[in-house]
Length: 260
Length: 374
Figure 1 (tube, each protein chain N blue to C red):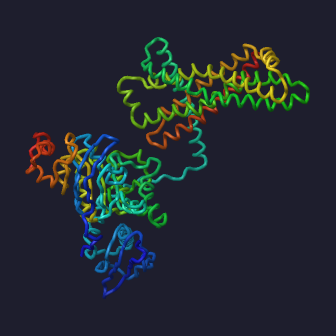
Figure 2: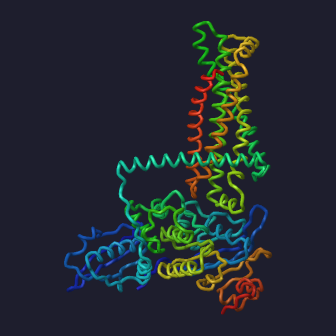
Figure 3: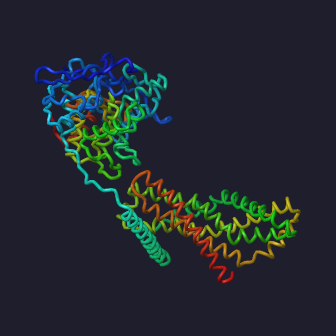
């Protein structure tokens, strides 16, 4: 019954020998990992180790100093601008604080990418926007401006905008930062629900342990000192089997929290 | 890319069972075949609806959109929907979208003409009240400054002095020279007809010192500095920096407005004198080139025409304009809303307000000075 969405020949994203640098300062080097289709992939690490920068590399905002990022087997930085735009149109991004355009209503925020990338008429776009807002539980807030709603609502509205074009991949930069535990849990549930029903691949930067264990399929851990990733795998497996004390420390909040 | 793909919707009947058959690629980029307005699409006899998605290849929001419409239509027409034929992902999303009831907001009526007039009048009244209360706060703030109790950073003040004084010199110089040239040109044509060319020096000298020097400097500062003040304070408002100051026990008016306003009030008279001088210089260049007036003649004539009271009129205006520009900039910045577009609006309205204030007060003071005869 379930319809197959797209071809499954390649892993969705393959990162090889990626080095990230600001000028001469190398932030992270030798990153190698693969993001499987339909998985929830988590980027972990201490503050300032380059998690958000890695995300910026993945979404095409920053060019790697060395190495490559492949989408569906296509080398992103070696392809023409048009191919890159096509790839990017297939990615939805939820920024840390929502990054909603403050001069537009929620409905217009969601409608803008639709207006730019499809031939739909005005009424249909408005209808689609309310549909997306309904999905994130914000039905009825179409005509509100971002400054008129709360932080948690802004985040959900940001998610609705990220999903506007039905992207294959969703990127989240600390989705639950600044949310209360209940709202954070609801957001996690929403993310899982979206993954399961739309078959979306999700890449997430977070250090919310509860989220990491609840929804993460795969994870990598970036280290501040060695300037590379020191471990990767399923968060639960990492907690049990990781040989890196730092990873264990991170996943147990320095031993203060025992989890199975 | 998806031009070759197609999507189709049909409705079929088997005894009492109506089925909506969805097939093909239901993507936003694909044109849908067989689509009709829903009331034409559903036969009146239809009471129960099922779905058949055996031929459905791909789907995205396009399908959700259709189902959303169908669902609300069916609930209005009391048609029972059987969702089992839909892909499981679609069913979950539909459940998700109806999980949180849509928030109904109270509807507001379009206001009548009278209501709009009243609202505008009220707005004007509130605006006047803010002007007064901001002025009041400034009075308190300055009284604290003069008694040495105002809290602000000296380094801030020095930076603003530089920003409103020396940093503005190039643009003020350029504009003043040009204004002097324009005054001289306009006057030269008229005065030549009477053979009174030498009075060009009086015209430029008085025009610059009494009016144009202070006025042009103020307009430039409104665009350059008033807008910057509004944008700075507005951005601080957006970032909750002003709230942070308040909670630290620092008065935002003392801390933010005082140094800016004081710097501008101190610098404006200096800029005015500079503008006067350069305007007179500009006038001389034209007098020299087109009217054959020598440097000494022009100099003597200017000295004879421009008295200390004319210069002080310009200086007084300069101080007042400086205050008004800083007032408008800081007021709009402090009152700024919490969004990026509000900051832009604050900057624009700071400039407009400042220029309106400048011209209005200029008219007023010109009248007053005429009355008391200086």
